[in-house]
Amino acid sequence: MSSKTNNKEESSQTTSVSQQLARQLEAAAESDEEEISVNASALSLGIRAQKKLLSKLSSKSVAKIFIDETSGRILDNLHKLARNYSGKKDADKLLKSIIKTIVKMGILYKNDLFTEHELKLIDEFRNRFHSLAKSIITLYEVDFKFDRSVLTRMCQECQELTHKIISKHLTQKSHTRIDYVFNYVSNIEFLEYSFNPNSTINRAIIKEIIADMHTLMDSGFL
Image 1: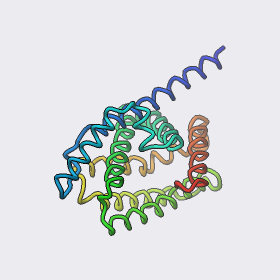
Image 2 (image 1 turned 120 degrees about the vertical axis):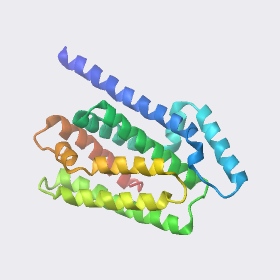
Image 3 (image 1 turned 90 degrees about the vertical axis):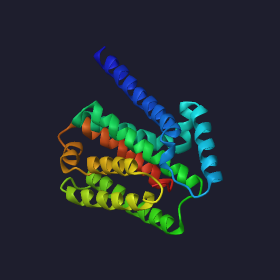
């Protein structure tokens, strides 16, 4: 009886986080329009029209545009770790910051607003992030003694690249969100907590994250 109750509670929590993810995506799509700077008024109007269209779509539709199902599960599990580590308020802020950043960069990319130099920075970010993901997998699957400070350094490299990519497009508010995300996930104490081999709960969450990372790597998305 207890097992069934726990399963129901876990399912309810997972669903609520996924729904929150979709709602945050929808809200982000229709807010802070002034943060994207463009050179041509026609292009600006086009982007605003796109945002208005996104705001009228269902939450699930908006989520599918920017975040695939597998990546959504990773974010859900990251939210669980953050909630268990520092509380719901911080976890919600982390999730919201990630989603807003993804949505805004996605709109910039879809509208071909990045310069050739910025696109090269994006490629460099992808390579660095791929290396970061492989290191996370190694930490879980191979060596618990893996130096956590290496993950922190790799996160900081991705953080710096992200700032460079958006520097000519988004406002300080977006830079602040980026700092919050990377500073949170690269914190040594958070990493130690998340990868604690003696924590059954965290091990189960990390196991799901690693499985989804493998899926994204196998499909060429990570």
